Image (cartoon, rainbow, N blue to C red; front, side, top):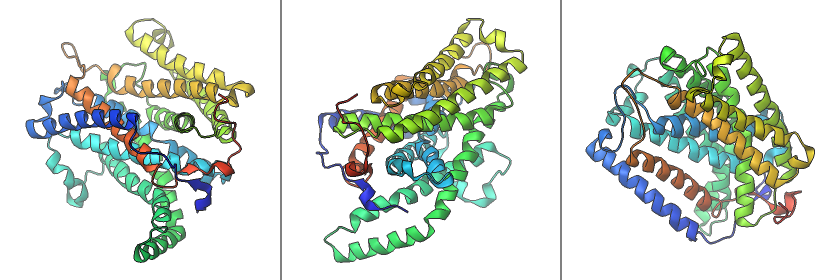
Length: 399
């Protein structure tokens, strides 16, 4: 599918000060994960029967999988719309998606009350085909495996350079096998996120009156699907500029400007659908009543609109600094929409409240740190980042 000359290994030291900091945060998170498995879920969380999920599901799964949709969004451009201009961004986007989805699945395991029953998901006699949660679980599990296969050419290219002749030959055979059949996994890789991202919206339709009308609507599946795609393009911009700045590489401005235009179109389209839906449901005045739920709605909308307005200028589209700011705002606003839908706007009744416990919070911090840590290691071992000689980017200092 791609030439290894299109990508390169980042020849930098793995052990850096940021590596140490991320390792410490990861270790703290895994300490609390150990406490959760040995002493029970109540030992590290403030979850209850009224609040059966907290930030692990609201952030790590509902929001985290949207942030991990960069691979899905770029794959639509490259493989569905046949636009190879964006192919150099494919592997880094795919790697971010792989870790994002893998750790989202891990978060679900941590959140399961009887986690030892999770293997029942693999037994057809226990399948509940009418369950949205079953569909989401199956899609996330299969998609994570598909992401690994889509990323594996980078691993095989590295192994083909091994001094071990047997390993190099075996890697070459696997690489040829994947080149022949990878298209089928790519089709799966586009179909599965379309299914489960819309289903993450469908799940909150079930909440009915427990979810505030600012977020509860029959078109939740559509809103969640479009939301994950514009977040996906924005997070690719964010990740590319961050890694270029951090590692002193040229900015992929040409491709990122194109992604910015698409993110602008989708984000404004999403805002238009969102406000039209509120108007049709006679909820628009309530959304501007400036009570707590109204303020949360206005913050999420303002972040997305402000980020989109920045992208309306052709000058800003070619400025890495402005692209970074706009992408950050859109990711924050789009992510807050999902967080509001799953936690802030969810009210199970009078007398119940939820705020994450310290251990619960540190587990999420540990998982996010682990994801960044793995990314920084992989780009220094495997050919993931676009080869500099292929890029038409602006110099690294010109931000």
